[in-house]
Image 1 (tube, rainbow, N blue to C red):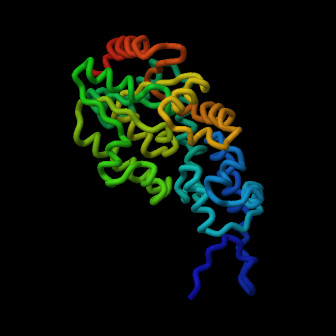
Image 2 (cartoon, rainbow, N blue to C red; image 1 turned 180 degrees about the vertical axis):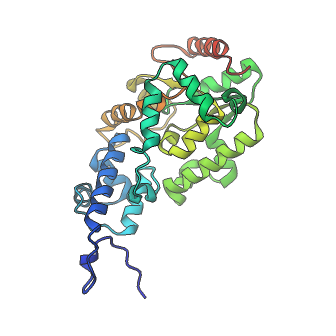
Image 3 (cartoon, one colour; image 1 turned 180 degrees about the horizontal axis):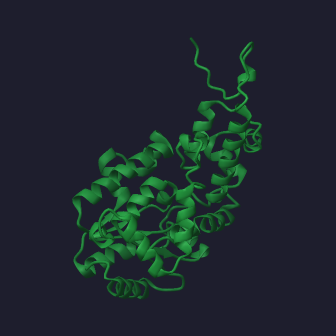
Length: 302
């Protein structure tokens, strides 16, 4: 028996039309559009990443897309999403959890602390121990500052992508090409679990997209003190170029606009960190001293 991969039952001769198919397609379309905007991607950029035509994507976002499971899976991978997040009845970004997250972000520090004490199975400080994680987009200075802070404090510094490479036996770019974003996110979650299990004291730097996975990001926040390391869009771009990686800019005149949109889309998620460090316009030495002072003031490493 051949496998039916399309959502619309009216494309199958003699098949019974599911009255709920239209609402499903509308829900999927709304979530694809919202996820694309959160990632700061134009429809053309998403088309290039997913190898799905712009016309098809436009139909999909409008709720008219007669899309196959295979094509939707490619779109989900390009958006760093699990396919079930696009299909499920409950949208993880508009659920009670997300509403609570937004209220938590807007609350004062005293309210946040009381909420954490109520929700945590143990004291927040006990769960986080002496673990610190630096989050934010690439180019902010997470790896450079994390390594220097580790040397200053005599604390191990770990890059989560290096843990993933050790587990998989291949570089990150090859891993993503082979397994896709969904496979990478799964390995990222497993690597985080490994770091939590093996380090009571550690400084961790993670990829900027870890906030795209609600479950992994929630576990990160529960088990690490967090600092959002940020910079201006221009400095993010310049630093990535300075590292010799021209891929974000190569043949992409919209690169800066996409980066700015991505920063705006993730601002709410990054702002959930306990503290923030702005490295814009500062030297490495200046940023390091500010980071040391911030960590000491917060007591993040004991």
